[in-house]
Amino acid sequence: MASRDVALCIFIAAFLHVSLGQTPPKSEVLPEFLALLENHTVTQGRDVSFTCVVNHLQSYKVAWIKSDSRAILAIHTHMVAHNPRLSVTHNGHNTWKLHVTNVQPNDSGTYMCQVNTDPMRSQTGYMEVVIPPDIMDLDDTADLLTTKENGDLRLRCQATGTPKPVVIWRREDGRNITLRNEHGIKRTTRTYEGEQLHLKGVQRQEMGSYLCIASNGVPPSVSKRYYVNVRFKPVIKVPNQLVAAPVDSDVLLQCYVESSPKALNTWYRNNELSTLAAKLLEDEKYDISEVTINDYAYQLNLTIRRLNRTDFGTYACSAENAFGKADGSIRLQELHRPTIASTSQTEVLEKHTWRKQTEKKGKKYSHAIDRPETDLIQKTVGHTTPMSRRNASSSSNIANKSRISSFPAPAPAPAHSAPKQVATQNGVKPSHDSRLCFIGLSMVILLILTCN
Image (cartoon, helix red, strand yellow):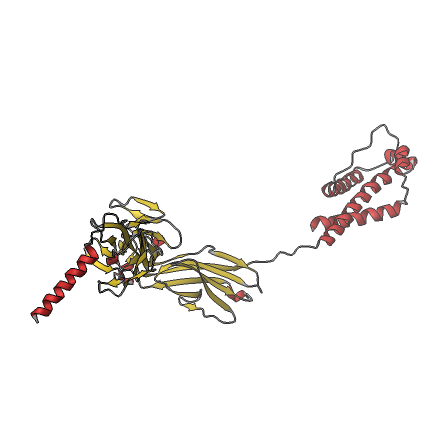
């Protein structure tokens, strides 16, 4: 047994002497490297290989060594390291390759291609294993991301990777992040860098989704979504507190509600004869709907169809959640449609009035001018009593007032002009009785139009 061990030791010593300790003859050409050993930056899980090209190798051997651990990985084409992810190949000429599959972080380091000359010849290459970023699960439940209005929240996002990732916060909807210091002074920013985001004095406008984004230059970047809940009691705003609509029409009543958590919303019809309000339900008469505006605001709509006079009155919208209750009221009243004459009727009436006024004005002057001179002279010099003069004066004043109120009086004729000349210009000579009838009829029409 001892002799067998001695023989084995002699064999190993001889192998090492032949493999690593050969001294070339003085006339022999030494091996030389034709290319540098490359450096690699590889993502975890990928495959990579180092290539070593040696000329004039002759009887020398090529070995692969991991420099930082001084571990011999392979000699020529024989694997020494017991690692199934490592292998070597030789093209039968001057090229040797060391293959590493499914690269892991502990594979990072310096690799050496060595020839067992004396002195030893070698070249090195470096492999860096990079790891894409990943965000750790810190069990931030929804309860930890909920606060009352004006409360504080702290969002945590811890990322791992090689190289160390950079963590950036931003809002999912693109709005700015609001930051406040201990004195309540606030500033806004589009992004915030750091693993923790401290929100102080949170308002309802800051409610929503926040994104934690981790990146280190190794694709892909990763992100995690945090939803911030802000709790507060409902608030109701009524854009139109007084609404008017005609009978037989449809009308829309609206209330604007802000609430978190979402409130229970109800419409009521206030009864003026009772203190109890009647709750409205959706049916053929009422259409009730909600329109979401954002995470905490929405609009309540009540449509009343085919209005009748019993529908007019006061309506109320109500919103209630665990933090409080709010109400708003709207007064609905009747809108009376005005009666307006058609355009064609108005035009006909205006033309008729203008024609009558013009005819009246022309007939008045023609009546005075077309009389014979003898009649005028007789009227001028005839015998009249004071009573008849007063009656004539009062009747003429009434007629003049009615004419003046209905249409502007024409300019009087010059005092020196002769009656016959004016009559000749007008050229109208109707009979006396027909003129009186026509003037009376015109005055009646004008009085009716004036009263209207």
